[in-house]
Amino acid sequence: MAGSQETSDVHDLRSALARLREHPGHLLETDHPVDPIAELAGVYKRVGAGGTVERPTRTGPAMIFNNVEGFEDARVLVGLMADRDRVGLLLEASPRELTQRMARAVKDAISPVEVGPAKALCQQVVHRADDPGFDLRKLLPAPTNTEQDAGPYFCLGLVLSSDPEGKKGTDVTIHRLCVQNKDELTIFFAPGWHIDAFRKIAEGQGKPLAVSVNMGLDPAIHIGACFEAPTTPYGYDELAIAGGLRGRPVELVDCVTQPEKSIAAAEVVIEGEILPDVRAAEDQNTHTGHAMPEFPGYNGPANPALPVLKVTAVTTRTDPILQTLVGPGEEHVSLAGIPTEASIYNACEAAMPGFVTEVFAHRSGGGKFLAIMKVRKTNAFDDGRVRQAALVAFGVYSELKNVIMVDEDVDVFDTDDVLWAMQTRMQGNRDVIAIPGVSGHVLDPSQTPGYDPTLPAKGTTSKTIYDATAPYHLRDEFERAHFHEVDPHPYAPDLFPEPDGGQGGGPDGDGDGRTDSGRDSSQTRVKRSHHD
Image 1 (cartoon, rainbow, N blue to C red):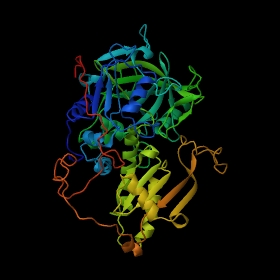
Image 2 (cartoon, rainbow, N blue to C red; image 1 turned 180 degrees about the vertical axis):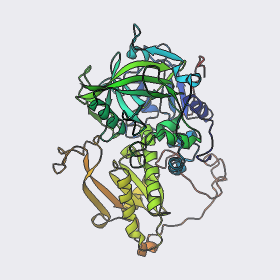
Image 3 (cartoon, helix red, strand yellow; image 1 turned 135 degrees about the vertical axis):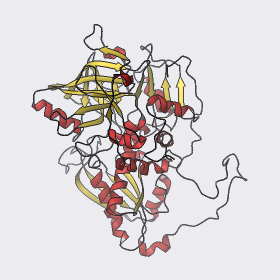
Image 4 (cartoon, one colour; image 1 turned 90 degrees about the vertical axis):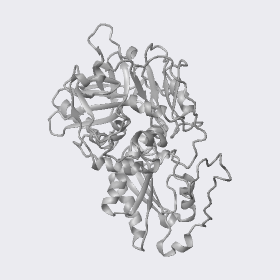
């Protein structure tokens, strides 16, 4: 696979889709009509959402819906990164090596560059909010995930903004954006997000904060934007990580109506400003009491007072593709989890080189709550370093809730193997360590004083280390039974079409040791020109 400094032929969303078309089973295109309100997500729940989505669901292809009801020329893409195998194809790494690939990109970061109007593909079509008849709701088919959603959402809107005081540069973050009327969105900020700090500075000055919302991007941009502090501290421009992944800088252009930048190759850009001292209920139009299903798998409560983003323009490429995701699906696991893995891996490598060899942010925690870490013990002192590594992980990623530590002979990507280690190499009274009263994540419904009255506030939790490693002095008693290595190809050629040379299996890409046999390999070709 290419190194992090090799220029890739994937440079925007369309080139990413072109790559997937070369790999059967990873992209399904349909002309069957679909309603963006609940139906589109309902279809993808069955086709390929995965993650913490209500069962039945599965790992499957990304989907392009070419016939979105109520939108004559709109296309919607969902699930681009809802499969670890597919992320590997798009980022040029094996599924098992994505952690290290992302870890190198942080070290090899390349800052974005500004380019002129000639390269502003995102501005091939411009809709100004002050034009008669402008209505965001008729321009872009923002979907809802469920019938209880507060409203239509842009779920993969990468918000770009800059420090109003000019001290901390530019930041990019994916935010929950609910469409409220023809030119207004509400925007949700989790505690500590850097663009919210920019907003508060501007609001303190009585000024709006200029932003661009960028959608339909090179997947390297979206996944690079999901790193968090301390890996990317306040003032760090995460677009530089995408530059490190691709070996070339992300290109930015001046917005049409705002003193801000947008991503030149984006399919869709919403330009606007976050208004000072203006708040709105997230479900003001529906009164459902719910926001949308988030990564833990629950419909969270609608926020009664969120900042308001006033839209001043929508700019697009010709025949644009609107990109979305299913909130609790496997795509969130990829977007949040792989940067989590890389952050933990880099921090542990700096603290104790060579000790932590693999990290997997498991789908059951949405890529945020659960990490499985493999360690290499070489002496008795390493028994203590196991728990030290877990503490490093908690320190580098504040939203992490549980860590399972395993030995070198356990496959971190195979849930059954991890659970086996927990059953045979762990005693609850000595190997489970709870750390109470630590900051966590507000979207976990168990992290509330109502669930646990000892918690001081919502988003505070007890963090847990599960040490499922064998004690070093007893290592011989915990050696697994070894089988004779045989090439299975002659005996089962349909299952093993190529001799594996006795190498054994690696992760298949779905993160739990399953095969791809359930993936739909069909591809319905679109019938009209897309000007791609």
